[in-house]
Amino acid sequence: MASKIIGLGMYAPPKELTNSDLEKMVDTNDAWITERTGIRTRHIAEPGSPNSDLCVEAARKALDDAGVDPAEIDIVVVGTLTPDMPFPSTACFLQAKIGATRAYGMDLSAACSGFVYSLSVADALIRAGRGKKALVVGSEILSTVVDYTDRSTCILFGDGAGAVVLSECPEGEGVLSCHLHSDGDLWKLIYCPGGGTLHPYSPEMLEQRLGFIRMAGNETFKHAVLRMVEASREALDRNGVTIDDVKLFIPHQANLRIIQVVGKRLGIPDERVFVDLEKYGNTSAASIPIALAEAKAQGRFAAGDLVLVVAFGGGLTWASALMRM
Ligand code: ACO
Image (cartoon, rainbow, N blue to C red; front, side, top):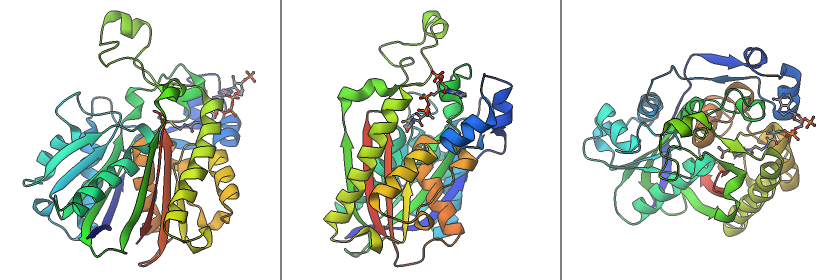
């Protein structure tokens, strides 16, 4: 057996942080942010709200879309770099909040590739007979790890959640293949140094601002382009199809310029490349499931169409999946 997506949902907190809001916080301007990134606004969770609350909103929509009761779910996987707590997992909080009583749950850490990694794990568990239905969520409250005094990073990130319900299906439908990669030698390109065992919470950690994302933007940009093109081609080659067969290409929503270069190198016309980062910014693990839910709502793919997703993020990690919807 294989697995296929039977329901999709997304959630963005109501509060927005626009480019003009950021102009009042750091030395930046709307023209720079729009030209260099394509981002116009992003959504920000209320301080003190747990990530699992965002997961619940997206998950309920995906379950409704699928017509599946939470009690039917066997597996819950949450891709995130901003969990409610170090433990228990955000997946366990989500399970309890929605009443997915018979499921087992886990979180997965792969930064912006977290959703595609989680999809791959859930798909593999279903193929291995460890469950028939999975809830796979990518959800982040990045505003808790963004340094709003650093103009080079604070303009990029937003909060949100996206969820899919995966269900057992015959081989040849649904998730056709997933391709996961990482290169730990390049960890210093994007990371958050504090809050783990190396720099546990302490007055020094707060003073040195170690609890915030640090990123070498230019270098990250170059790797993002190379790796997303590579992983996309890998998925096409594995399935004996070409980019012309793909109805919709959904790349990680980090920067419009990255998306445009990747699309051009793959030879796919703009109208088949999905972009929503102007509304949400980079929501890390939530970026691809939010885009999938938005694309479905906009009628950008139909049953039977091929959809290619590709992600890239801290680790470095990168991953692709080709799906027949
Ligand atoms: N407003 C105005 N000026 C700025 C801002 C800003 N917000 N930020 C930087 N600048 C300035 C810089 O100081 C620099 O000025 P200088 O030339 O006087 O030194 C100039 O603008 C150019 O800076 P660059 O860093 O070269 O700008 P670039 O065009 O590379 O854009 C960006 C920066 C947007 C960060 C880009 O490099 C990028 O998107 N990188 C990839 C990010 C990514 O893919 N992340 C994915 C993973 S994230 C994860 O895993 C959590």
